[in-house]
Length: 180
Image (cartoon, rainbow, N blue to C red; front, side):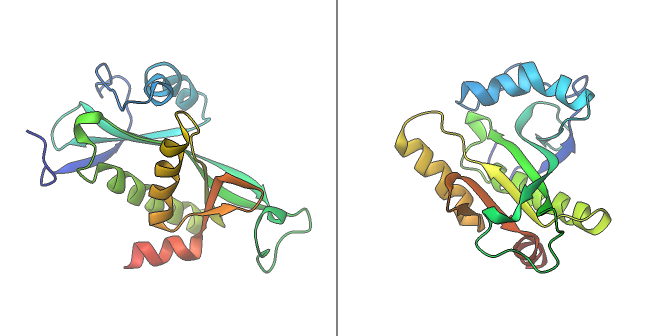
């Protein structure tokens, strides 16, 4: 039985090894991404998917998908020092975070988010990365959107003034989380 004490590993997704057949997080778009799009996007080097599994198991309890990109500093409340003249800074884009219904509320989502932060630090150290960026899914009603947004805010993400669904966290903030 899965509990909040169950050892969980975060692994690079291997479609031939990890079992996604029964994955259901309660959001059709996130289920469909894992079942229909993730394999091709990963194969085409458009994203990287990481999965949460019980230690020694292959059934997916949750996943996140990340890729790299840029954002224009005009979207930030305060442009960082040393911004290139073209106005774009590198970011790690968090495309999805999803947790299987039976694993929700057990900390799997927080483990996945911490893994995103660890990956962001590696990318920032090796290639440069100013922030982690995401778009809160609007699937569902206003209460569902507010709940999702609130979950990201608990980690320290802030909305852009121009778009409340687009959120970011600077690498300075991410490193503070990793170091604590």
